Length: 172
Figure (cartoon, rainbow, N blue to C red):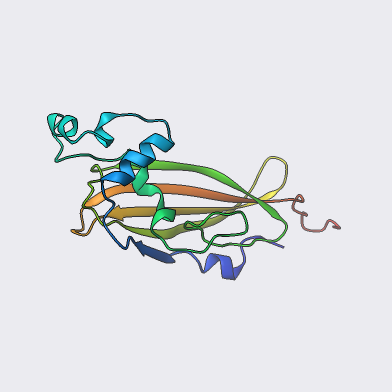
């Protein structure tokens, strides 16, 4: 039995859109910087930020990609309240295949961010151990209230079958 069912294949092209209910504000960048141990004065000192050519304080680049702060989603069983595709693929374990970020413009306190997630491709492969893998390639674009592109995120999620695939003619 293949992990790539017609229901899973039909997810290709699916989108989810999340828009922040308010502008990020200056405190968001300052607090996020503190939380991740980045004490760059760009996040807390407006005069310093202006001296660097910015309009004022900004935020660490990856803050824009933290959809959980504005998606207004309920927590999942693991306590995560951000975007997931909520895929349950029985007989597998989920692993993250990686992310690739492209940042186009720094976040400003006045920005109201919209994240648009899409499932771009769904494929099935077999690894060297004979386990089937369901590979979900998704992407997100982050824009502000004026439609300015702030960032892009390409993400790969892999579901690996717990048991090796059974070849045609073999008994399970």
